[in-house]
Length: 339
Ligand code: ADE
Ligand code: ZN
Image (tube, rainbow, N blue to C red; front, top):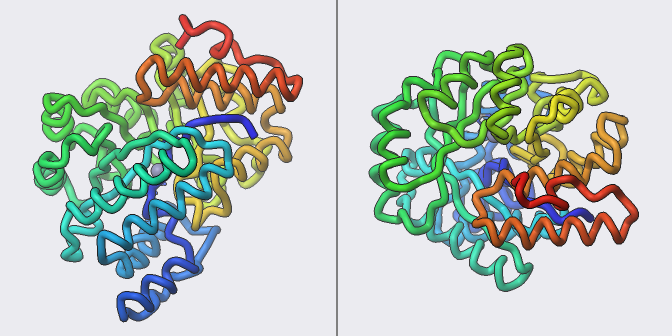
């Protein structure tokens, strides 16, 4: 298993049917109708409606710790050595769950994963675009007392109709607090959404970014600035934002174009797989070669918010793995100056 970094997973999207049943029983709640619902979905919105409804069973700090712990244990088996986890606090606070229970529960799971699996990681608080910019600003203010637990802010949920520019002030305020910035863009929205995320929000990574390929100037810009794209192939099939054939997935073009793209899992409980499942599916479809799997892993590490020493240590692990399995050593693992 290639050592790698998970940079695009929504912790709420790891809430699988088993844990939904367990938490419903523990909290004396009915099992939501969407428990066990999986791909395919008509579009992003149909998925999101199920995803938000299932969250009803998450009530206590222990629930969030258990959710995080299950995900991190599974991620460790996929070769994940560093996990930057998205969390949607508004989806919990609007149900009356205190924000500190969400953040402290997940942080406890991350601390345990460091001890048990030798994994590093952190939390990225995402704003729900469908609730608008004022609600996002309130959500930012609510998490700032826990600033030390956070790596970055992000932007997710329904994309089309909620362009990045709406959230300019929130991202400016987050940057002033020293938080890193990422944003979902180019999943269903066009290349203009990617430009706005970069130019107006100051996003350092683009989550998905598939539709960036429609704009040759944008592709050139992403290449020149080495802007990471965190790509989720099984999600794209499940939500019909790519496919239907994985062999045609845009990750192949992204790598050919020299973009810093890496593969991640998005909402693995719903889309049929974790990071390793996504990579295996791409190889099985002939979309990427075994050598390119190493490139994807190195890109993920280089795209992370790890300090330089942490990136260098993981790239050294990738180099050792390549030598062990007789694969090509990814250029990034040979030349740290490229990182
Ligand atoms: N929240 C959870 N999964 C998402 C996705 N694929 N796109 C936007 N928001 C999300
Ligand atoms: Zn996502």
